[in-house]
Amino acid sequence: MSGHIVVKVSAIDTISPVVKQFTLEPCDRALPRFSAGSHVVVSMPGQDRWYRNAYSLLGDPADTSCYRIAVRRQEASRGGSRFMHEDVAVGDHLSISPPSNFFLPRWNARHHILIAGGIGITPFLAYLHEFERQGASHELHYSFREDTTGGFSLELQQRLGSSLHCYQGARPDFHRILADRPLGTHVYICGPQGMIDAVTRAAKDMDWADTRVHYEAFAAPESGTPFVARLAASGIDVTVDDETSLLEALEAQGVEVPNLCRGGVCGQCKTAVAEGRVEHRDAFLDDEERKRHDCIMPCVSRSLTDTLVLDL
Amino acid sequence: MKTLEQPTAPSIKSRPIYQWPDRLPDAGDYLFVIEPCGRETLSELLREQAHERVRILLHHEGNEASSTGADLGPRRTEPAIWKRFEPKLLETLKESTVGCRLVVIGSEAFLWDVRGFAVAHGLVDEEILLYPMAGQGRRVFCAHCRTFTEGVHVSPVACTGCGCYLEVRDHFSRRLGAYMGVRVDAEEPGAVPQQEELN
Image (cartoon, rainbow over all chains, first blue to last red; front, top):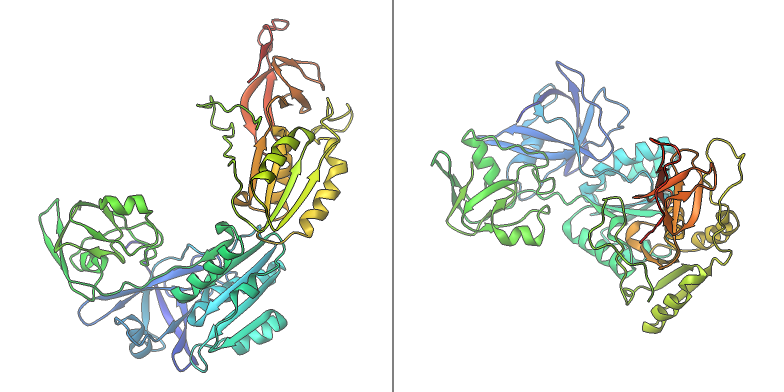
């Protein structure tokens, strides 16, 4: 990936037993400005390969003296979050991508309802800085497991007061949250897929237009059946094992595919498929495009056939 | 339903293509904003199905031939009809909640006035249905003196602001709810072609 930025870890704070916050300072050049909702991709050297995970920037977008990210340690970590928790120390250097954003607030909204689940709070921490600065009307519904992921709730209590609604170990009543809202209200969800589905279902029940409902559908690549990716131009076969994404396997072979979100959202890594059938796992392609099996998002999607021939 | 005849292939991209269903999508709350010419369409739509909540706002002042006087400053584009109706519409939108669907029936210019106002007050396009009625003519925006001429059926037409003969283009401004009018005899003053009926 081009345009990498080297940063120094200047502080590590324990937010909760499973969440650590990392403060990243510039080394050789100033950090680029970012907008609320942005993320960076952190590259981590693993034992046998690189891990690349996207993390939302949770600091104040007006402050570019440092970036802040929060990492939840995943039980079924593929390596990335474990690496951040166990192998990164203050003073270490990390390589990150420049910020990109697929989760911007709608600035013409008259009221913003934020719904966060667990570590999904992170993009909203940046939103809140911006909302406070602009005097934008907002409220936050923060749902988390007791003592594990609710580490930001004390700070939020002080900042938000009565517009903070916390749900410890209980699912909020989304129908009630969305009921009788004035025109111009938009809702944003960042959390597990089940929460996104529940809110979008409630919104549909209550005749909310899709364009009022925004969510960050980031998915870490999930494991699957191993397959072989054949590169049509060179005839090279790349083996993709069960725990590695196609994009990661290509990168390990030195094949660079342009990419941004690494979570099946942005469409940057779209790659043409010459032969084989694709197991689509992204949120970018529409149904028609999926049926054609002529392209794939290698960051999350895999192959249904033993061999997938790529136009690379 | 006497809706505007749509060009099968619009001559220009900016000309809106409307998609109106004969039966409204199911939603709990409908707000109809109509001009008198839309009454029949309204009753046809309401006959089709029952909704939990229906509110109807009738704008009955009609389009005035010309929108403004001569000396209102450099931009003479505010439709006069709008001033009296606006507070009523504003009040109705303020008491509306997300989920409400807006259906506007009337002249094309009226549709876009209401649509612009509704979007500025928090509705999104997916919540707005526009039913343009046939025979209402076009609103024409003079590119030279910036005056609106309402209810135009022919081109070229004399601008009610500066008197220039304007060729009525298909180029449509959604913001102004108007077709662009440019001086037809700019190259050769006085050479005004014969008027043709607009579709």
